Length: 300
Image (cartoon, rainbow, N blue to C red; front, top):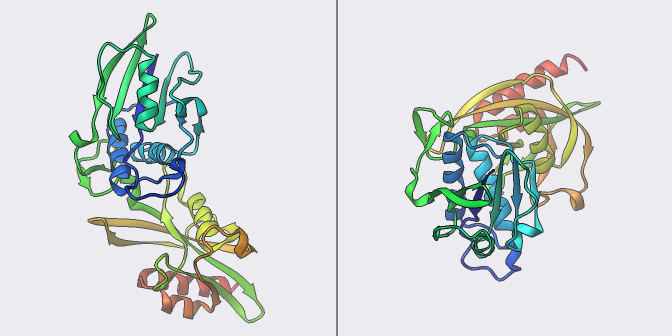
């Protein structure tokens, strides 16, 4: 049996809330991503992942898995791991446990290893159980790993500032049919400085269309039917390279009330296709909105 033990990344320095809700700082996210990319290159895909019930551990698990090229939607929250105990592990396969350093020290003390592994935020241990004895196969410290990530992952020849999956994105144009014609729902950007349509990184394990549905619900607070085929694609520069964006249309069926909308700090507004297109910062998405509106209007 092999087990991966990942110490949660560094948490935010100034935090006055509950300890379990202390978020990762940027450095901590980077630590988990670098280790995840290393796991991807070594083809160490966990069969099951247990996370301690705290923000830093869970997000570290998510960041590591996605950087490795795997879905992060099957993480199991384990109180045992949070208390520094081994959960019930599968007899075969590869398990990964993620917890804060203090819990990981307690867990390791019960394994009676033949060496002091030197735990620190972001450190990964690969352990093997043979004839009832645990031993350390490798210790990976994110400080020893490259700062840049392989593209396309996990063994791509190019190196980029962010994990490979960051550069594949999807956007969605929410619309409705009215007596006066098609209307487009636009939303305020996260900064509130301009208007956008929902857009985000496609998570490993999801196709762009499924990702677009999630973005529509989170960023615009709408639910509806997404188009079977994209209405277009475009590229833009970010993180030192080009991001490829696949754009879908979504006919809105339900407008989620503000009280239930995850990102209700954003503004949202129904406007004509031409006004929506003219408000887009990226001209490419504006052109796609105009072309879509002409196509859909012929079916009204």
